[in-house]
Structures are given as structure tokens and as C-alpha cells.
Figure 1 (tube, helix red, strand yellow):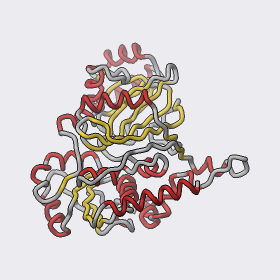
Figure 2: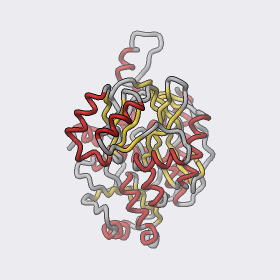
Figure 3: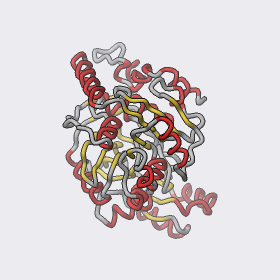
Figure 4: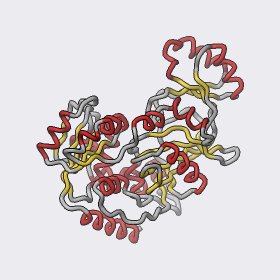
Length: 373
């Protein structure tokens, strides 16, 4: 642990001297994403500003933030131009999906006043972040993914679910962090759900539930080519909880990265992405579930456990600064419950093995996040 701490300090020191004083405008909605990115950027010699449409974004209280602006107009850039001019912003760096998409739409205009961080062309981006469009794209290109069908009628739904075999999932084409995904064990449950929600299901797809572990591959790509990545895996899921896990194991995996590299090449992906996959417990195969075209909740863990600082890397790439070779580390993150349970065992763990140690570095913001103020 002591050696890892020394190495991490050396890495942070190198990152701090790699860039001269820089002004960065982050644009994002989600508190956790913003706080994670801010923590990772703290080693840079930079003034960091935040533009957010979330009036309760806890990052407003972050000690790493110079100033926060609210009332973000997600369809325009005039406000961004004013902030850039006022603070001599060097880099405009959106970190949430819709914010990244909006900046990409206006990149040509904004690049006249500041550098914009990398982003994928909108037509490809829109395929990737839409579960229905992505499922079609992956199936057509023979990229491993679960079977899927569009929900069109009660009769078709009954046949499709029977063909897939229960349990099955209904997923919205656009949601994040596992929201609105529902699992059904039999036709009676599924039929009742359809009858109650028939008019709302045109944006939902049906897929089989795959028993297996959650695999997440986080990447930065340059025009379809992988520059850096981390792979994290969570325990096997058999239930109906589709939210992210706090139990993470970071490791390399040739099978996973082969699938990801091919998919991102097909999408000509340019920038950051978080790809959710499932490892089928029956045959150990991996299948792509969805692509999040943004930073992710465990971006700090990617840095601390696996040794890849994605936000700093994005800054350097956008500003055309030197990026050092990447060496992925193996590591793990535990829950607080696991740490407490290990207290009286030989393999004792500590709070340093949880995600909460980094929270202590930015206490006021994390308290605000907890209290949702």
C-alpha cells in the first residue's frame, strides 16, 4: 500500500507540471460525475469553472471549483461564450451525455474562442446512446449483444417473450444508471405491465435477462482507435437491481477489449465512453448492453484502483499535450459493509479500500450531495 501511495503521488506531481496554468469550463448535470471529474483534475495547475443546469448540483460546493454557473441553456451556446470570454477559458469540457452532444453540435463555432474536448460525430453518438438504435446497430454488425425486440403489440410481446424465455427485461431507449429497467418472471406479470403502460412503451425494448456479472469498459478513443481503457467487473447479478455496484475488480481482459475495440471502430468513436456489458455465467461470453457517451460514476476508482486518470488524459489530448504510456493496474474496491465484516478476520480491509476515502478530500460537496441541497 505504501509503494502504491508513493507511485500515485509521483503520478500526480507529473500531471501537475505537465500543464501550465489552464482555465477549464466543465459542463455537466449529475453531481456525482462532476465531483468525480473535479477530484481527478485537482492535480492540474488549472482554474476550473462549472456550468450546470442542475440547481442542486453538489459540485457547487467543491473546494476544487473556482466558480459555478447555473441556468444552463442546453440548446444554445451564448452563455458559454460569455463565460469563456469572462474567464479566458482555454478548454470547454462537457462531461454528461446531452452536454457533450450539444457542444459537438456547436464545436465549429466554439473552437473560434476556446478548444473543445473530443466528441463523436452526432449521428454516431445518437446511435450509441440510444439502446434501441444501438441494439439494431450491434445486431447488424454482428457485435455480441443480447437478443432484442421492439414492443409493438400485446400479441407480439407474448410471442417474443416466450421465444426469449423468462425472465425478460423491458428497457427504455434513453435512461441512465439503470433507471426504469424492469424484470418480469412470467407472462402474467408482463401482460399486466403492458396493459397499464401501453401508450408509453413505444420507446422501450424487450430483452432476455442474462444471469452473469456486470462488466464495464471505460475508454477514450481517437477516431475509432482505443487510446486508453480500464475494465471493471462486479459480482454476478441474479436479481432486479440494475443500478451500479460499489464492489469492483479492475483487471485486463482480452475478450472484452477485442469486442470493444471493434465496436468503437465501427462507430468511429472520438472521446470518452462508458460501456456496460454482461458476462454470461453459462458460457463466460460477454455481450454489450449499452454505451454511455460520458464520464461515469466510478471515474475516481478508475484512477485510484486502475491507475488511469481519464479526465486529465482528456484535457491533455484536447490541448495537444504529451500523454504518457498507460499501464493498467489490477485492483479492487470494496463496500463499507465488507470492510466492517473483515474487522475480525485475518484479511482485514480498511476504508481506503472503499470509494469513500476520496470523499474526505472534498467534504462539503459530498455532504451537500448526501443531503441533496
